[in-house]
Image (cartoon, rainbow, N blue to C red):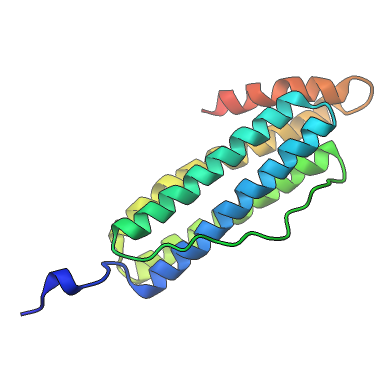
Length: 175
């Protein structure tokens, strides 16, 4: 009879590896949004700076949720090294375009994780990943809605500050 206490993990190595890769994606998102927060602050876009600071914290919470899940399942979560974070951005609009691109990338990563979980018949992790997929619907929605304001309001004159004032309202409305 097998000694169950000697089993290291109830996660397959492949699933542990892709979850650790996602930890790095979440940490990268957190660092990217923190850089965007600083850039917006430097541009006098206080509401957007606050929005990105909150986004950075949220991504770190997502990273820790994955980190704890791996460890709780007997795996070994890896604290990632993050490099290549920009400190300057092309424009106010480009910051939100990059945000939408990042969120769409994260959604695709979670879809791939869910697919691998199904193929591995790891329904526990598949169920865990559902929360992140639902969260991604909101994340993409907020980024799209904010980008729509650039088309509706425009950045000319006081447009940037009007958009900035409405950023948190869009985010709060999606919750």
